[in-house]
Each structure stands twice: as structure tokens, then as C-alpha cells.
Length: 264
Image: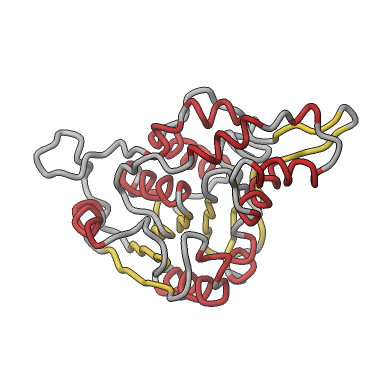
């Protein structure tokens, strides 16, 4: 059985696209289309989409899952691109398995631990009794009543699936909630005195941040340099954390150019 659910399109040097928390493999589909001259592998992260449900989920085991996927596809090394949590998976894979990573792109996330910021989302999702739902509009109404803005609610409801017996979540909501501390954390300490400091990933690295987002800040610069000394940075004006959805043409062009420059 496969480590994760994935879709492969195109031919050329391989690129792995990794979505963020509560997402699925369709989130970066437009980027996959833009990478026309590459073999693009879009995946559902464990506990998301159609991938297996894990009770224990952390960046070291997720990085291992990425390498297992490369092995399954007989790929020696690939470009890794991830948004938010997916960016952390890409960074962890580069740090642990540098020989399997041609280049690494992290979209609007830094290699640091964050404070919790999804409590209202988890509260809204867990308050929703999906077994009682009769339609999606009902679910949307309940999430917006719980204080979740409509755009976020619609994104979250992509995880809702309907069968003959009614609605259920594709994602493993309980598993994500149980592992949330690991997902906002970071297993590598970025202080030089710590034993857990990884050998830096010296390959081509890119951070793309949204100008209006607070996920990548000036104070994160040293953490990037300690772990990814070759890091380049790009900022997209007029975008928040969902930069790939807000300014897709610019985002896709930046990623495509970076990957093409670093093909070998």
C-alpha cells in the first residue's frame, strides 16, 4: 500500500507539491499545471484527503514518508515545494535527506516553532456534528456562526464528503488535533549550541512570503540562515498567508523560474 495518496502528471525532472494544514492535493494544482515541463507529484499529506490516517504525526515521520514516496516512484531526487505545514515538511525533508532534494521552496512558513493559532478553527470543526448534516450550506452556516470567516469555512468544507449514509470528514480531525503541537512545532533547534541543530541544507532554497502575512517575519531570518544558508527570499505584495491562491500567476512564475534555474 502506498505511503500517501498522490497524483502524477507530466514528464521531466520531478517536483513534489505539498499542501498545508486542512488542505489536499488540489490546493497547488494550478502550480502543477504551470510546471508543464516537469513530472509533478501532488500528494495528500497523511491525515488529509485520501491518505492514511496516522495517530502520531510529526515532521521527522512526514519527511520519511516523502522519501518512501520517492522510493515507491523510483525517483532518486526531486524538487520539493510546500505551503505552510507543507513547507515545513519540505524543509524537514531537505534537512534529513539532503541527497534526495534537488531544491526546496517553502511558501509563507519559517523553520521555527509557532504559537497556536488554529484554536477557533478546531473549535468550529469539532462543534460541527457532521452526522446530522443534510447539506453543505448547513455546514457552512454553522462554521460561520462559530466565528470562522466564509473563505476559510469554504476551504475547510472541501474536506467534507457525502456518501449513502451521510456526511463525514475525509481528514482525520481527531488525529490532527492530537498532533497539533508537533505541527506548529519544529523538531530542529535553530540555536548553534543545541545538539538538535541539523546539518544545514546547503542546496538551492527559496522562501516566498506574503507581504500581509505574519508567518515569516524579520526575526526568522537567522533561523533560515542557520538551517538553509543558500536561502533566497521573495515577497509578494498584496497577499496574505494564502499567497498561492491570491496571486497565483506571480506565485507560479516565481516557483517555476526557481525550479528551472536549479534543474540538473
